[in-house]
Amino acid sequence: RRLRPEEKAAGAVEYIVALDGIVMITDAENPVRELTKEQLSAIYQGKVRNWREVGGPDRAIVVVGREAGSGTREAFEENLELEERCDYANELNSTGAVMARVSSTPGAIGYVSWDVLDDTVAVLAIDGVKPTADTIGTGRYGLSRPYVMVTKGGMEEQSEAVKEFFLYMKSGEGEALLKNAGGILVEAVQ
Image (cartoon, rainbow, N blue to C red; front, side, top):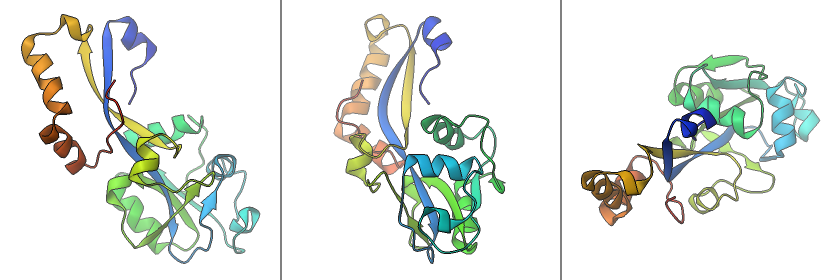
């Protein structure tokens, strides 16, 4: 997650090293393949409860999300400005559980990290943009969360070991580790 203002005020400095795409998924049989952020917000607040209201079949929407305290949930709700306003049918404690519930529940919608996608679910475009490594990494796909490294004070205040570690994270080997962990590299590490 991004640092909070009070953390920055206390001297913490953030460096975004990669992104995690937050991908919206539905059950594979659902013909809806795109939503706007406004529609998504209305669905997660319980204002839209049937797929026919967003161009789909006459079927109840089953809203699935992560449990309170989940970083993915926090980022999802923050991206859509929905903190404390979601109306979940199911709050699950892992990305795998969300995938399993959505794939096996007609009418379900949920969000998962980019790196766990498989063909058991359908992926939704948001505002006409499909989630890909490119669209997430460049910020065109609007749902993501940063992988952040934090120092106390700016880089100029850090020891040589810390500076070397940050250089390593920008190296080919460091970037390979980030990709292997599911991170999507951004154009420039801040």
